[in-house]
Every structure is written in structure tokens, then in C-alpha cells.
Image 1 (cartoon, rainbow, N blue to C red):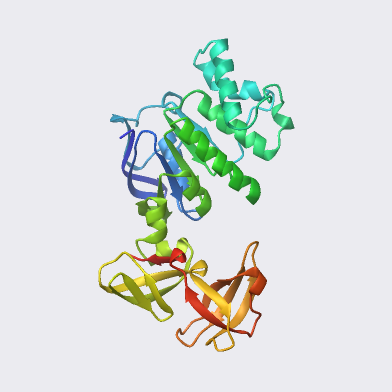
Image 2 (tube, rainbow, N blue to C red):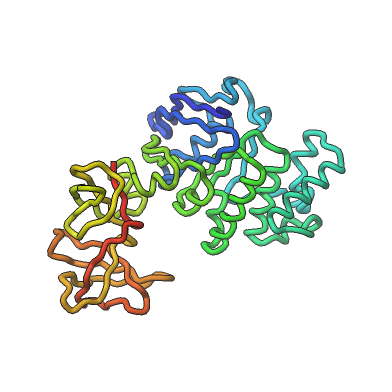
Length: 337
């Protein structure tokens, strides 16, 4: 393992920001720390970087204890949400900074700058001033600068959060491609589910300074460890079910599951409950909100004591007060535990 963190805690007086965290990151792996604001994920990242002093625990790189290794000797690259470019340098000067500090010759610096700018869609930007860049361009340059010196570990603290959603989604795809092409080992801090699932090989769900579950995006989506994780990952209702022969049956119907026979709990996301206009339907729409590619509904149904969230197609979405039929979509349903 490249990075191993054992029993790590960070305290500020009586406040514990990170509590007894253990994890490993393998060479070439990207781990995302995903959680709400204030859960300790940025503090944990800063402790790995050497910018925060742990109150307990160890941080080891390839077996070596980093406790006495200063920030500048860890060979870790960092990217913050605002990029923090050098405003007096042009794009090439920013990207090559780490290489210059390591004594790389001019030919190597030019080669690496051109390689990274091409990967990030910034060909020809070498002489552009940092102050002339858009937000998305500046963040691309910050990523290129962090990668230019071939860091042993790349640490990304909310690198896309300052961008608008469309640009953030595109840059997340670009960044995932760049990390894979560079075979980079990285830790990404984010509160955005889509960003974490796009970038990471594994995702650590973090709340209250602790890890709740560490798993692949697919496993997290399909099998959250408990109701807290399921709720954080978008499940708005949890229903008891009974599994028989690979099918889980709950109050709203049946869905296929990969689980042994017996009792189970299903986490329902709005995308897992499809509402269709139906004069004979037992459900009644109580709220309706348009989203960019669907309509989100709140539906009362006699099978459940509380309303359930559902989605409907934009073209045929029912109105408030209309009767609907509810169907389950297994792609939007999680098996909890």
C-alpha cells in the first residue's frame, strides 16, 4: 500500500474533528472522501498533507512514518477549490513551477507543460496570464500544476465546487480521464455524490469525523451499510421487505435483489419509484417540482403512513391532486445493510 492511515484523530481543544480513522490508498488508486460540510474530511486531508498535526494515530507512506516529515518533503501535490494560481505568472509559469523547484531542465519543463495542457484541453494557453482565465480554465491550470512535478500523492480539496454545475460535471469527467492517464494516486474531498462517483475507485462516506462505509461506487449505491448512509446517498424512504428467491417484496411492490431469503430493508430513492397517471391508482400527488429532465413528486398512498417521493416523465407528469400508480425501478433502490 502507498498510503496507510491508522487510528488518526485531530482535535481542536474539546472539539474532535477527526476521530480514530483507518484507511489505505493503493498505488494508482483514487479515494474520495464524501460527506456533508463540517464532517472532518478537509481536516483529514490537511493532516495527510502535513498542514494539520494529528492528536493521535499514524500516517505512513510506503511504510515510512510521516510524523516528522515537513510538508515540502512529502512530495504530495495539493489543489484547493479556488486553485490559488500565481497571478504574476502565465499559464506555463504556473504549471512548470514544481518542476523548476526540482531542478528540471527547460526541455523537460516544456515537454511536461505541453503534455498536461493538451490532456486538459488547454493547448496554446502557455503564454496566457493567470488573471485572464475563466474559472474552469484556472482550475484546469491548477490541476496541471499539481500533476506537473509527478507528486507521489495528489490531494484535491473540493477542486470543482466553485464552478457552476455544467462546468463541474464536464471538468469531473476530464479530471477522471487525466488521473487515469497519469496513473495518479489521489485523495479527493467532495460533498458532491456525482463528483465522487465519477472520480474515485473507492468512496469513503464520512460523518461526524468518522468513516461510515468505504466501498466502490457501485457497492455504495446498491448496498449502503446503514440507514444514515442510505439517507445521505439519496434514499428518502426505508421500507421493510421479505426476500424470496431473489425477489424482495415490500408495501409498494416487488423488485429483484441479490440477497438471501429472509427479512430485508429497502432504501427508496425518488428515481426508484415511478409515478404514472392512472385514474384507478391509489396514490395521490400532493407536491410537484420540475427538475431539468424529470418531475419530482410527493405522493400519498394508502400502503404507507408517510408520503413517498417519486419521479415522473416531464411530458406526462400528473398534477397536484391527480391519482397515480406507483411502480418500483430496481436501479433506484438500495438493499441496506
